[in-house]
Image (cartoon, rainbow, N blue to C red; front, top):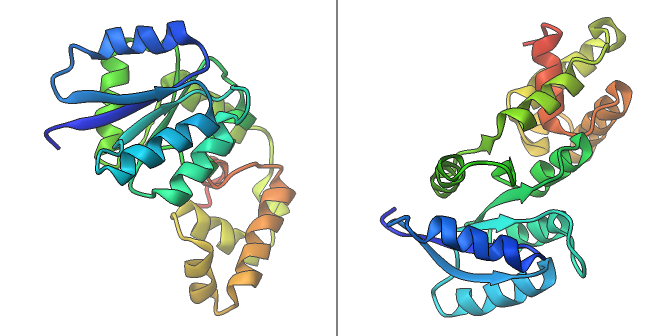
Length: 213
């Protein structure tokens, strides 16, 4: 991709100005717009998209008024699945990380990330690749390492865990198990509840930690 069109969403103008200053020198990144909350971002991106200048990547803050970043990520990915989103926030909390990833974020970075890490994440997102800052990955890994004996799951639940860890969707799991998609969704939900996990990412990590994959 010769040019990556970037849109910035943050409720602090000083952060938006700082990001513009950091990224202006990147030859292959062009900032096409900015907004101070999720709702305004959706409105602005709709206008850009209609004019054929929609962003390729959006940097999205998490804690904002009017519409928070996690809600905006989900809505944005629903409307424009081709647009990739990176959560850029000061919040290092397991539930927020999982919520952002489940909503469709392609990456999760903290605002103390350096310019090189940020530009790398933007380019990786534009290429469809995920970036988790080391502190973020460690937070997820530590959560997945909490004691949860593998023998607490039934053989069918273990099979569901393996399928989730392999990246299968509910529909694919249903096909493999020979059940309806609704039943597969129930199996996955039951596994998350039983293990006390919040996302498929954590299920995958739990499976690795407990030797199921």
